[in-house]
Length: 274
Ligand SMILES: C[S@@+](CC[C@H](N)C(=O)[O-])C[C@H]1O[C@@H](n2cnc3c(N)ncnc32)[C@H](O)[C@@H]1O
Image (cartoon, rainbow, N blue to C red; front, side):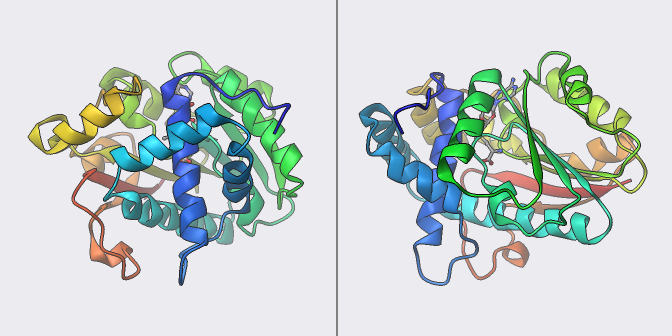
């Protein structure tokens, strides 16, 4: 992977860890999904000792909860597919990291899929997709923007159509923004959502900011990664913005496909429509 510029901050590295979890799942018995882009990244990490060391260390920090990330991934896979099956032809992943869904989920050819993340990560991801040789199933548009700034302007400039029903995916990021930034993100998503849009998101449970999360926070802190926000009121929060949400705890067997998920990290998974 000689030409790839690996993003330097720890938060971006959490995306690389998630890819490692997905790669691991794909290689196990009876996987809930496969992720060739994640496998390409992990194979390429062999050339990058710092990246390989980070992934190994995160594996130790998070031992006990990769199953949560597997269940979370499958949960959002199923809900994105449902949105596509029900007319959405525009998908926006906010904080996309190195998520491989554009290269692995079946999506109608006329779908446009925007993947927004910080500029360094977006550059890295675009190069990764190109070098992998994996063909996105539909049009993929990388957008480099910071979710704490005017990211809707960047999305619109990249060709996003606010009149078209959209499937929004917000996975693995709200806990790293402040509550106010999360509120602003929800307002912006809502303002850009035509009727028939879907909003799929994850948030951290409040217990993770207390004793239950001490060990996880300590491990992440070594990488400069800090849980900043959590909420236990997703149905009301989304409802207040006009979204009808169905919410599951990450440990809920109803979404586990037979996997049992460790009680940490405690988190909520929501699928909403408007
Ligand atoms: C845990 S990863 C999740 C990646 C992806 N959603 C997934 O599940 O594979 C967190 C991602 O959030 C991105 N991120 C963090 N803060 C951000 C911000 N202020 N604006 C845009 N992206 C951000 C990081 O670069 C990283 O890719």
